[in-house]
Length: 505
Image 1 (cartoon, rainbow, N blue to C red):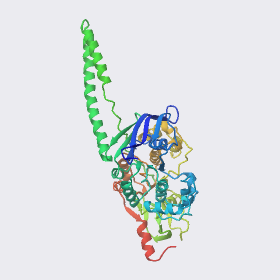
Image 2: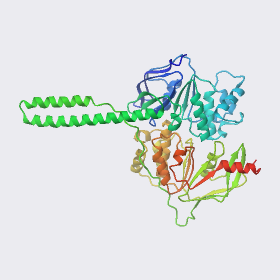
Image 3: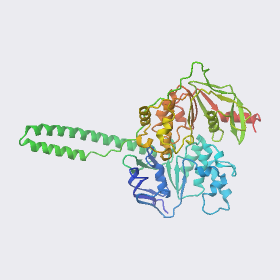
């Protein structure tokens, strides 16, 4: 198959989950063999659903999806690990990628691990790995199938900087067809040669050629040109209607002139360019900090030691760190070193199993707001409205709905079960909860995951101004640079130093 051939085509495809919930309306586009395409669109536009239409997991309401050849293989790295996979060993997880049993499965796993820079025991269960390690496993699971079309859904979520750099290098050299959903602009620009834009308002797919930044600039310039043209047309329409009113009141032959004026105004309205509405950005917001009792001693978290994992060995380093109100702490280190585990234990108030002592205490007076990277603290069967209502100390429906609207969560979204929301909408729901909760301690585990890049500066500004205690994990340097950080807990440096001293299991 030559590189000028089309491997994937959507022909007048419409899709809706149920009546009045249409995501695509007559979408048509084609992808050539060897292309590396970015899939863009606002949260909830249907990007992940587009991937499911490509894999055949979903069927179009009308229209057709073609691959050439018809039996072209498709591999997908999803955003999150499935619940079914959590209880599988690594070997079982990869065996499930094939219809027939592979006699050389272990070698295949080893080879694909070299690509994604992993070294994990094959008999260990998936749920025992960190979010970053699971992200690499998701990618490896797609790559091991050597598909004709590779689909990557938010592949940089939970990856550390080294992981992002490795993935970027791999995609730059990748010779097969690849479609990527991501909100990491720099990552996308490094390898993209085209963009598919899902317009949430028209429910169509626009296709552009060029790298990511070129396409974003092209869309921006097009909107500006069309808005200027429409502004001129609106001025002309207004003038003609005013003139028509004047002539109509004068009567006689001037009524015919007025009629022609109205007809000219109507024709001008028909010629107004249909402008694609720009992606909405969430409103600026503040996360109110909990007001503590006057007898509160000011200590929200007290560390006696800090745990870490290095080369599968546990270690803990002595510490005298006290986290008080208005203290912003960043926890850093590569995937698998124990960042998410530390944050989970701060939320639960229990020290990680296998360590020597109860090395930290969290104030029982503190209201804890937790952004969990996989949204595992949500009840997915609960309606979004109820998830917000339950965290309000005093329920006020007007405040709930107006706050939610600022996060682009309208009445229709709030009436849905959380399981029906896109990953991006779940992320915005999580931030809305934090605003309504008024926490004294924010625990944030990869708060940029799944979030549209347009929203990130607004979120960073809110976190920078937060006056409570905050402990955060993030692998996005540009995002972190916009937030005041008072102290960094570097788990990698701690574990490396302890390893040199011969401390650890």
